[in-house]
Amino acid sequence: MTNFSYYMPTKIVFGENELENIDKYLDGKKTLLVTSSGFIKRGLEDKIKSLTSCLVYTFSDVKSHPEFKDLELAYEDIHKYEFEQILAIGGGSVLDASKYFSIYNEEKDSNFVTNLTKEIINECKYKTIPIISLPTTAGTGSEITPWATIWDMDEKKKYSLHLSELFPKIAIYDVKLTLSLPKDITIQTGLDTLSHALESIWNKNANPITINYAVNSSKLIMEYLPKLANDLQNLEYRTEILKACMYAGLAFSNTQTALAHAMSYYITANKGVPHGLACSFTLPMLIDNIIGKYNFIDKTLIEIFEELSSKPLRDMLKKLNISTEFEDYNINKIELEELKNSSKNNQRAGNSLVWIE
Image 1 (cartoon, rainbow, N blue to C red):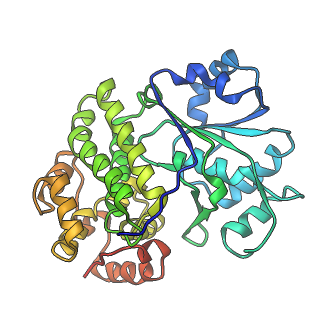
Image 2 (cartoon, helix red, strand yellow; image 1 turned 135 degrees about the vertical axis):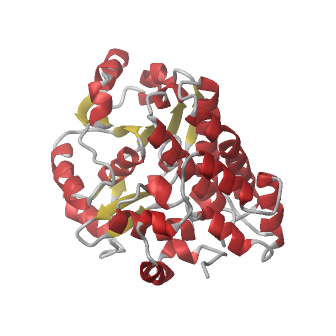
């Protein structure tokens, strides 16, 4: 790793009550608010309108695991309005949907964005609208990465929208926005963060900068996620987990994810397992398969777990009542082989230095 590069154009703001300063970040520009219906019910739109006069329209019908058919319908309505930037407040689905909405051509045609995402078209002219992201979960990392996950459930397939222009302009981490997360989502998003971090280590694109961020992220998750699961209103624990999410984003924004995520898409689409679980219950198995193969990975795993073993991670998952057995996710031996085969041609799997045997 004597030659490497690192890129992060997103401005990061981290602190309590940063939502109160939103007018400063919107800077007088016409703004589209993209969020979830749950936050609208809790008065988010009214709160922001009391803080700024920049909003021109609010879209709040973002579903979990956003699908092309829904985003295409929303796109046509959204782009009837004139706006100069997007304010995205929510979890990964909201942030990913915002990236889809931010791309446009002269006709402002949603089919164009879908075809671009599915790589039906490659060389084309497009523009992007700047995004200001406020994550409300500590897991996705989409607030500081240049890609989005969009689903076609008719095809049982996940697509990755990846353009260098999709790095958000600003990522604002306000820890108080995560306080309303229930226990199951807190655990799932925390484990998604851990997967982002670890997968950026056993990764062909890893470098000293990304590894350093990944180690910091992993250590925070190992220490604070079990504590937070038992004390959901603890602001200190929420803060450390949000930092872990940020560090993981700073890592995998430059490496992408790897095999655990490649397998997770099949598991989520075909078994309905939430993403955070689907991409994390395989991590101990992957650790067992990578030990002893790369000296730099061994040293990193010892730094995170204080031993060269998957046992500390298995113990933590057990505390969180997370199984590491494929059978518990309704995946039998035949399906496991299908899963292995389906992952071989996946781009994320191609980043991986480890494979399942």
